[in-house]
Picture 1 (tube, rainbow, N blue to C red):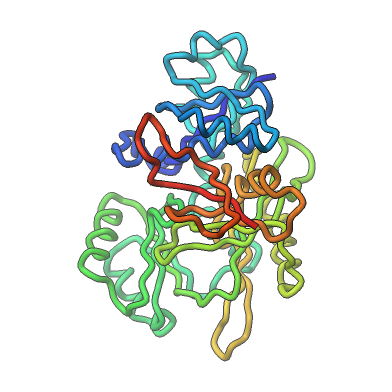
Picture 2: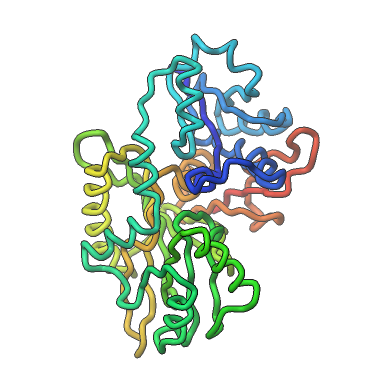
Length: 356
């Protein structure tokens, strides 16, 4: 049963109504799409707008993998009778349209369910429902409301402003200051004036961050797929995930998983099914006490953390504390390159690595 994998990593942009990709985003997707191979099965296809170098395919064989076939959209009609399932990074109307065109049975959650469960307003609602929201987390609808809120003492150490949809640091501001810069003010004003809400929360001092992966069936109990340590860059962008790690020093994780499982049941009730990644944090509050934030961000789609688990299983199946990192330099001596060197004959700028 061959599947067609689609690396629509700008998924949230499409949910937000931004349909026209920039050349930078298109290239980013082309460079990152080959990383989906760690999740594929024998006989699968990967839709890639630009060609992948043969050296990468040979490298995959070293790990006992039979690489999937990389195809372009022009080749899809030839495979219409072969493809039986579509596996996108996230479900959008464009992906559903493709499934219909290929006459593949549509087994996707509804657009309304995907839109709702990926929104910042929904994760805030669930946090409030399960009484695990930040006391000073707030939704704002005007610039005056936003500026007044930032002036409060709770935001003296900095703040984070998130838009309704965003991923890997995009669609948000992280500031260690006490007021908006001119650039940040323009970013917020543009979104407020377009009628969109913003979500303000205090900057937290992390003790540890987690990317916890779930699989939600149409019916039945949501299942824990895996737990990763989440490492983010200064601006909130994804840097790396670590898997097969010892989490004994984080007893709070039990409560986090309990809350997340309850949240997954609500997500299922809302009509969504499929992969879900929920970010969580243990942070240091005033006085040095440790507190938890079980529902920091909800991603009703595939995630980098889920891919990290797949790559760890491919590259270091017997090892503990395996990391999958994004970066242009080799992070360790035993790091294995998991992205091609060339895509469409051009050097890959967004490189990925797996190491133990």
